[in-house]
Length: 133
Image (cartoon, rainbow, N blue to C red; front, side, top):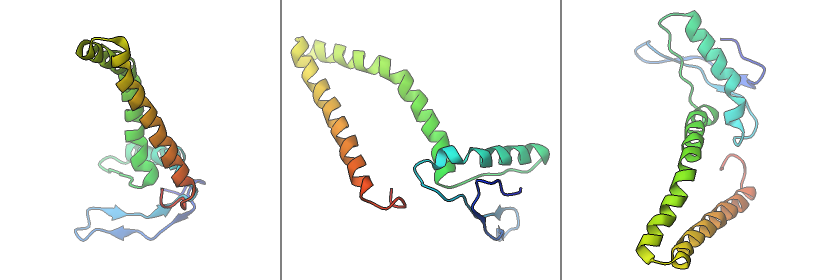
């Protein structure tokens, strides 16, 4: 597989002890925050290589490769869960507490703490080097 323009450097191939696998280190540089979007050309090249050569399997491991699949799946799961979970939670709390205001307080508290946690972690990450995030 030739290195696409997105790849900054390609290392030396390292064979496994049993000779059934190869490790090809590569670095596509840039920030780790958007690595999952920049890795798509590499995933496409790997898929094309697998299709062109029967019996070969190519796996990619790294910040971008490993974040892409779960990130997409989690996003889809949250999109499906959001319209169901909040009304269901409110209904359960309404039954338990017996009043609309009493049921809404835990939900508002939870939403405000989630917002505060996301905001404070984002603020903290701005002060750290990008390799730590």
